[in-house]
Image (cartoon, rainbow, N blue to C red; front, top):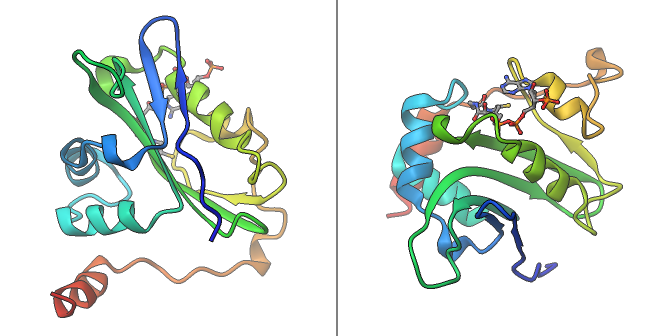
Length: 166
Ligand SMILES: CC(C)(COP(=O)(O)OP(=O)(O)OC[C@H]1O[C@@H](n2cnc3c(N)ncnc32)[C@H](O)[C@@H]1OP(=O)(O)O)[C@@H](O)C(=O)NCCC(=O)NCCS
């Protein structure tokens, strides 16, 4: 297992990105995904916790520095699931409404695609309306969608697996 050292990036206007899962405010991620996302609306808190725990990389965007004394709060998020060789999936990308339009998601995407072990890796994501955001970072529509298959997500089935693990 590739162990990724925790990294941190700071912007002069006080925003910070870090891959340290210890700083994530799960409640913020849960509230956004459960209430405001179009892709997993209604997801339970336990499934959010498990998906964070089991992801290869989680990126938190903060206003203020969570590694220093003083106030901070999480204002954005994204996570990557990958083998760090051939395949990576990017998901759950969001910036809270009050912090949008400040280039935070573009800053985050620049950091993610420049990860030393992800640079040449085939990267996948789904989006309803943010194609031009991701296209700025090398993402393109699938060349042969007719040759690609996916099994749909069924959160009620996933939930049952975790209930049995209690
Ligand atoms: C999409 C989202 C993450 C953008 O975050 P942001 O920090 O406000 O974005 P930025 O300020 O970095 O700018 C985004 C860039 O992508 C472009 N863009 C393309 N589609 C967009 C969309 N649906 N929403 C926002 N920006 C979009 C913008 O025009 C901008 O490009 P430009 O500066 O070259 O003109 C944010 O609006 C959000 O959280 N939306 C709700 C959740 C969501 O849709 N997530 C993406 C799921 S795939």
